[in-house]
Length: 197
Image 1: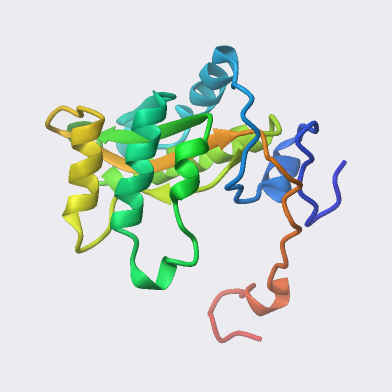
Image 2: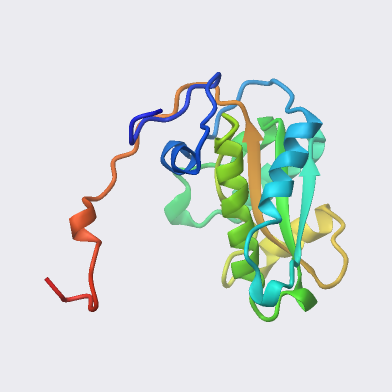
């Protein structure tokens, strides 16, 4: 079992939920190996088990492999990148073997489209980690910048009433992800009230 803070190797799979949670890292560089269709279907199958408001099950998952489309998504994300996040460029999307766009049906979301899509994306991230795949969470929406979602919507030919929520690139990591330094649990764990000691 991996030690807390250690990331998976490209040839290593996490096998428990605890492992998937503690092993998951944001990975932006991938080897060019294809991801088998059965693996992608298994990931989406797990992601659709995510909770959703009033069990509306509003999520749709668009699998993007086309190189031109991946390049366009990279360009869209770069154009809409806020200044304080430019140290994390999105050009790597062009080389991701697969990008999954997590989208939601607004009518089935019960005014919780963002939350529903984010929960499904989190399940997708953990399912990918459990299979030794690298991912990173990228938003397809930005408050105050409706053009980001509009450009993604147009590229993916989303019908009216379907909103893009996240973009999740998938690939086998090109290098071992670095270990993650976590804040001390005693600085974030509170009982009954925030100011309780």
